[in-house]
Image 1 (cartoon, rainbow, N blue to C red):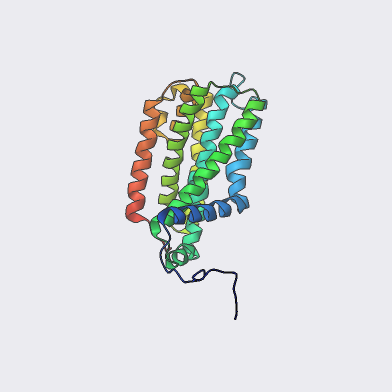
Image 2 (cartoon, helix red, strand yellow):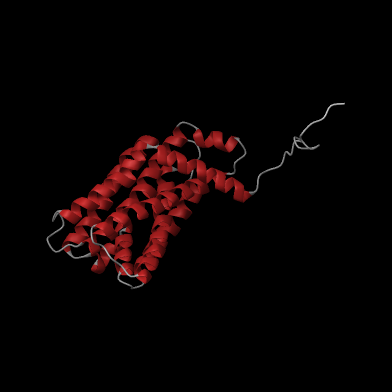
Length: 256
């Protein structure tokens, strides 16, 4: 008589689809690992913003009167632009070019889960960026009240949504070569504009420049850290997020 240490039915096949929550978690984990293993992504999303934070705080690159209180919101906006827009758009475009999205979809993973996984990866990266840059800023002398930090996290979350939608739109509709060129060019323009606004007039009085998403995010963070609720900046970011999401839903392609 043979005995087994496994209960009857232990290895009975159960050919059923995983729950949406499990698929979201698994896809998000995979996309996050790929994001963190990509050297160019880390350079663009972490190393460059970190160098910019230390350099602008220690050297009068934006004027003698510019303080770390003004610099950190700008750097957080740049980091979000890097991970949510440029980095994601380029990675997505090359995934489409090499058929990675198509093969993932052929495994039975719904398109919505694939997109959600990429958004989760950007959200995780944004959290890591905020933690790292905030810690370094504290060492450099930055301070904020708890209410201001909570308001800033809300604004940052909306900014991540806006730039993620823009990244999905560009990376999911254009060719990889065009995305590589345009993504980096637009990043330079967005970073340049937000730096110029801080240097010339201050992010708390950005005026019409608030319509630029990077300026809206940096300005919103500046006001939030000061304890004010930046309604205008939030509305601008929500408008960008809504418009980009609608366009991506209409024109997004899983193949190049």
